Length: 507
Image 1 (cartoon, one colour):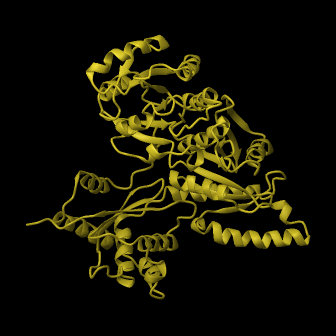
Image 2: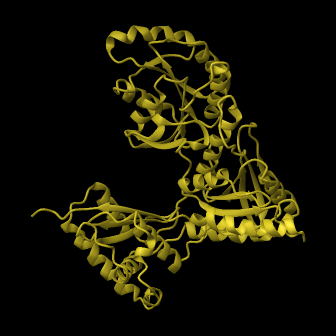
Image 3: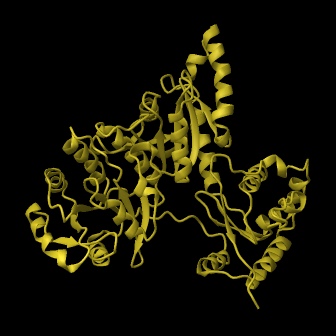
């Protein structure tokens, strides 16, 4: 991987040139560049993206939450294969390890022009001693956070005691349940399905997730019962901005939530949930309403005997799914840990805006040698371990005393404003042209990839697409990101830069 220093090339006049930019002329030039793409092989997605640009700078649309389908079942019944079949692509899910090390819990799926969230509870490896308890605990989480459940059973093995344990939970939940009789690879095996009627969940749907047999019929039936808007992850359109409060155990997340709710004494609404749900609290801070979501801490390793810890990682993902900005709480009296960094990386993967709250700051203001040393080491840790999120607003607070609490709202507002930021196409292409002129991409194998055209495809987070003639080095893409941050205000938000390598059309 090429180092970013390779592209530095000394000081440039990029900022001055962008300040002097004639925006109307820039738009005309961008239009000419876009017209030039007609000489290249483009696919349907490219055409849709380019057509969307002409629709102007419309406002942000708050979409209702997608309905949630959970897939539950014991190990080795084919849950992962079914997830991949529904998604139409292979995801990391097949090799999942349980807990926070997972790449994802929730996927976006689509069938017959209907979109929904798919929650996978794969990666269960219950120990022999507590198989029923472990599986049931994890199934319970997914059931709670879903609108509809696909309960997968290995039809060739039949119903086991573990399956029956999960059935009790499903009946109690009152959720819509589809019984998926998996591993029916051909018609000769269909008689095996009859035995599953004994589970009392209604008609079993014979499927072969590996071969795709019966999956289309299953999904057609699911869509008939699935609500169009989630009843478990719903939020008001244009309602209070949604803030997830994250952090490992005992860093002060709940104290932060309680201080926010208690100090202002304006708890507008408490949304009741079970002990497994994130508790949403609407509070008034800085003259505005905010919806705060408190989540359970994430432990270092999620052992499956500890169902509550698996819960925590699933719940954190669910909270991020519903949030717009995450406040990651770190305890300044302790060394920044791998867990802290992992939680921050979960936020980055989710594409949410980010604010770092360094809690228990009052402990570092005591005048003694030990705290003076800790303060010095902390700055070094931040520089080393959090360099990749140096753009995130940082607030030094004490949730216990309320110190510097007033600085949290401006940090949240900055992060959200930049998460929504859009750069006009003309201005973005002018920026790319000037940047490449000052700092061209290095030759690779005697060739130099060109950037043909660039556009911002979406906000939340700001996502840019570059049409190129070849792959850009990861270091060069990071360089573009960094210069974008330097010239435009993107504090508090990740920036995504995607490439579409396109070849010239053969005449």
